[in-house]
Image (cartoon, rainbow, N blue to C red):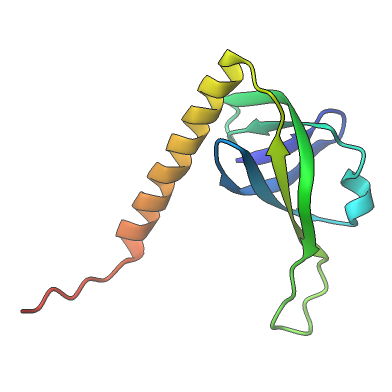
Length: 117
């Protein structure tokens, strides 16, 4: 899922999303996003969209790499959602269920179980 600014196009990749807000990775300086008060969230194929969600930034920090050669200024921002319409709540619930399904699928594909007695 991608995060879009209302007039900026794609600005980041969703990390986590819940009823009250979300977190996303983005590249660049935090001042670039300081004036954004609304975001849209879209599935990569754009079949599902959650548009014009009022947000308030609650966290924003740089990701520190273990590799000193890494030069990309990756940041993580957490935002709290404002009041959502009934339609936005339905769309948000769908995004949350999609993320949970992806996490379960990823876990089951990558997990190794040792069930010895």
